[in-house]
Image 1 (cartoon, one colour):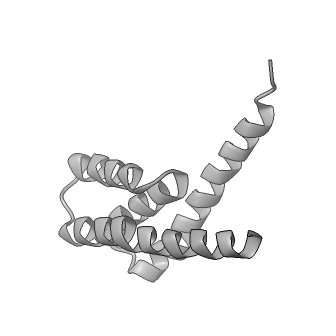
Image 2 (cartoon, rainbow, N blue to C red):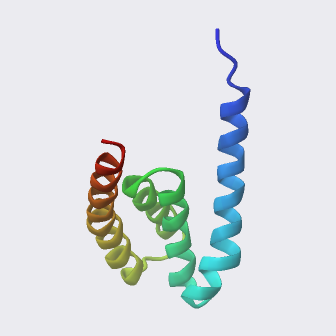
Length: 99
């Protein structure tokens, strides 16, 4: 049986770094309001997974407080469309580089 200690350490480091990034960088840049807080929840979802994680984080936050129209317009478009386009270009670039 393999040890999972390194995986747990990496996961904990990723969570801490995403929290710091969202709190210290993204939240101030987005305006320090409720919409910024919901967007930061989405950013944490992206950092720890993918677009569905971001949507689930924002939904949980909005369920507890109130809905944020701006966040639910921005996150699916950026996460669903632009991320896929950028990933396609990056994968093609790396395949051409290593081929």
